[in-house]
Length: 507
Ligand SMILES: [Zn+2]
Image 1 (tube, helix red, strand yellow):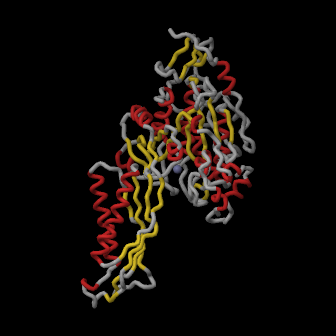
Image 2 (cartoon, rainbow, N blue to C red; image 1 turned 90 degrees about the vertical axis):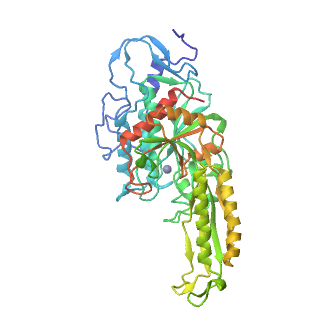
Image 3 (cartoon, rainbow, N blue to C red; image 1 turned 30 degrees about the vertical axis):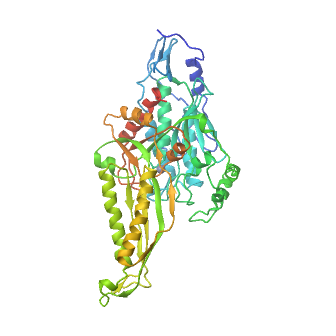
């Protein structure tokens, strides 16, 4: 029998905390849609006047007498389940999320931000703001503490017993690409809300605060600046980004932020908005944006890391234009043939690296000859191309970039052309925390792990030295398009793995 610890939070206190939610300013709740209204299941269309969501799981469940305090996690005592006092509700199984709550949030987001076929939640625009308003309303209904930082990131906190302890952040971004899908980013925020709602429903109080974070501006589609919200959290943004113009309206990023009542000064002064030491871990659920899980027939996967990228953005090969019939091989300086030889060599190296178990992706996504100079009866005298190398390993990318330079010299000599590969751009890989990976793998019925080829906010947190964990959910029809699709059952697998992780946290 465990004794009652100091710092104990009573059920009465938690109930009070859970019932103080208010509707977000500027949003409308249905008259009966207040926090903890005693009804179950989705009851209204989210496309009507306001947004209503089913009450958090646990409302209206049978009342049973109970008198015990149970530590759920005997080792770390991360959670306590409080089941004392007479007339307490029966707790629900820990880790089950409320699918109706999740579904209603996804529906509300889709209804409010769909334009034509696709979703438009423009970075620091009306669409993204609408997403924030909807999520804020849901968080208020859960009774979470809501704060918004100067650049617009929203923190929705389930208080822990020790408010001063480093907290766990769970979330993702709420913006979308133009004509995108409903789940890219938003699924991570909804998963965070579902996880804390499940803890509430099971009457679990965490040791530390658990904060669901809705992050601004992850997509680079609008301003050609990625990770605005998460990089801005840590003072990592170049202040020059505030002058970057939106691709369609031409409005500057800084002006868009100011128009929303936000404060650009932390970006101008590169000021941190949170201390990395105050974050125990960052967790992100995201749809997989490739076909791997569909092909594997799996609902979810644990992410091992987010690949970095080393790219020769403006490579050239210089040879000599010549008559295709009149110039024999010894006299040719064929830039296109040499470029193809180089790319083929890189492709062969990729095969070798894969066979050796190295994580690597090699792509040439652009290869041009000059339309003003090329022709069907000419040897090409010049090419422009891109070499894009991605890996979880900085060393692998560097080795491949070195191979590209070495091979360019050798092949250039053989073809009597010259390559000018130029400098590479570089973004660092972000490795997920091994302890979090292991713990998440144990939460999956069919454990599977994979690297992420796409960038996510998680890479910023990992780069700050914060233990970071990520889970992918199967997604049909690709991503960054209106046909993006995710089954609610698959979402539940990922969200419940996260919820379970919170009850037995390995860090
Ligand atoms: Zn995303």
